[in-house]
Length: 238
Figure 1 (cartoon, one colour):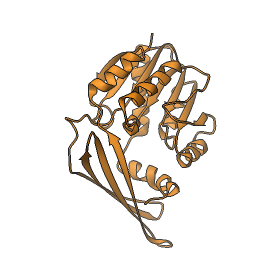
Figure 2: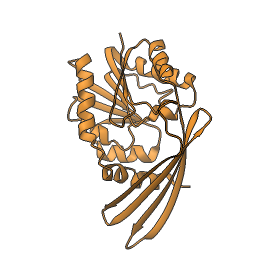
Figure 3: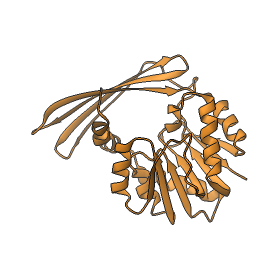
Figure 4: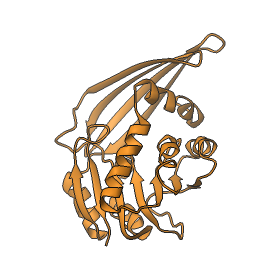
C-alpha cells in the first residue's frame, strides 16, 4: 500500500506530466462563476488537494480558501498558497462560520462519498457556506452508463531527476468503481520504488446529483464536457 506522503510526492508530478492545465481550468471556473455572479470576490475550494487550482484561482478572486481531508495534501497546499485560509476538514461536516461567493469541488472528489445521504449532507454544507446568489461548481465522477469497466490508464513522467510510471485498472464493484493504481518511482540515488493504492469511487446517477442540489436549494445546470470529460454541475443558491 502506498503511504500518504508518497502519494502527495508524486500526485502533482503525474498530473502535470499528463498535461493537466490548472491555469486554464481555473479560468473556466471563474468564467462559469462570473456568468452567474458577476461581482464574485471570494471562493472556497473543497477537497483542494495540493492547492494547484487554488494557486491560479488566487489571481482571479480577491480572497480564496480551501478545505482538505488529507493532512499530507493540505501541507503541500499551505506551502503553495501561503496567503490562503486553508483548513483540515470533511466536506460532509465542515463548518467555517464564513460565507463565500463561489464554492468549487473538482477532481471528482464527491465520488468518494459513499451514499446519497452523504451527497445530500455535502451539498447542504455548500449551501450553508454560500452568500445569497452564490455559485457551487462540482465535478462529478462518471455516471453508471458512462463508466468504462476494465479501463486501463497509463502515464510516464520524467521530472526533477525522477522517472514516474503510473498504471491504473478500473472495474465495476457494485454501485462503485474500484480503481487499483500502481506506481514505479525511479531515481539515480534512490533506485526503484513500487507503491500501490486502491480507491472505491461511487457511481452516482446524474439524477442523484441533481436531487442533492435541489434538496439543498440550488437551481442547477449540468454542463459538458468539463475539464476531464465528466462534465460539471453548476448550481446557484437563492
